[in-house]
Length: 97
Length: 443
Image 1: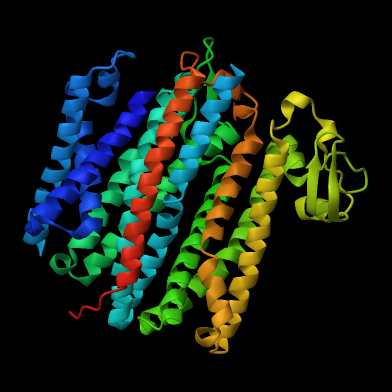
Image 2: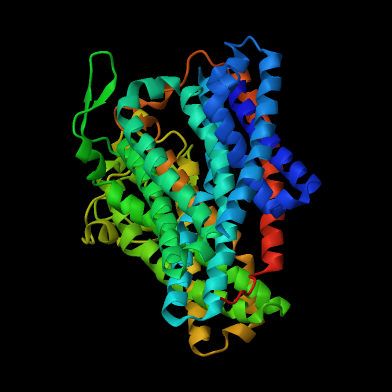
């Protein structure tokens, strides 16, 4: 059950990371709205693609036996998803415009 | 067990209610975006293109929130409702997977192309991407409704010895008599919500004396779409749905209409009244005789079975909630027709843009289509109780036996906190977009 909550927290981390990165490095920013959207999809994409290596919400809960290190990895990957998503989206945006 | 069932249902009700705030706007709004873009292609007036791009921004925020809040729904099938998923997964897994594979990917890919690719693709292809976003969002509604229609009126299945449902006839899922009326009713209701949103943003701009040209365009479009969709939601689609409930779920029909006793010479329609579950009657009721029989069967004196006709275990378990949900939905729907009819009249008389009381009314009515949509879904879901799959699988048989009520309550509180944060973020983003307004760009 707590796994479901972790999935949501993970997305929020992606949103915060994308907005934080966009705020710090202005040339990659799409504004709060764009950064938020990219943050959601970036973190979901990375966690859904690679989480099964051992840091998806179910593995973190490990049958009710919480593994903190996996949660840290999940959060880092999720934040990375937000940041990488923002860089890729900006590159794509510049390319097609 | 009772506690577990209560908290599982409460958590699902909370998360699905919050989730459905977003798709109900995106489905209807995509149609209006296609309309604006189509108008631009036809007459080459820039404000239509600006309007399409402005509403696509609002669409994108809602779509993203829909994705975030949709993820816990997917998880809950495995956590709180593991037994239900195990028993019916062979059937509902088909439509839910198709929703993800066909609709979601179509919608999200072409949404990005619509937002970023106008210069690259040119106007005709840009219109096409908008149309594909619309197609994706409506296809998403179709597959979700197909899943729900099967739960309301199961067809094309076989039950194995171990109690598992398997699909015997794939096409039956999509030719389910419950599906088409439910889909049309739901989609038109989402057009009502979007029309009110578009009209209310227009009213806001006109009242604030800002972005007047766009304000008038939004008001005119919102009112015309709003009037047509409000009428179609009531008739024929609402009527068609009610007839389906009377035919396939007669006990739910009696409960939602508040018929406690079977009346031999035709059933009355209740306009106002409060269910009294102790004395099994409606208090303070205002009713019109024989109308319900006529509306349902086109016969004034046709008998409609009341709740006394059914065994207790066949009746929905929360009759007052079902009754109020249904009556709130119908009452609000009637108000929408009235307000939109009045607005259309003043639009025709060229007085709408200066009629401040009506503009304020349109602006402040915005939450009510959302409430009407949600209470419509409550009616469908409370009416199906005490079953998950009507007549075949009871709700008590679908919950996960190993997930404790404390566990569910803890995560529910977590959801409440996180959704409050998300809700605030959503309001800030939408408020900022509306405040900035459409941006005029020449090509």
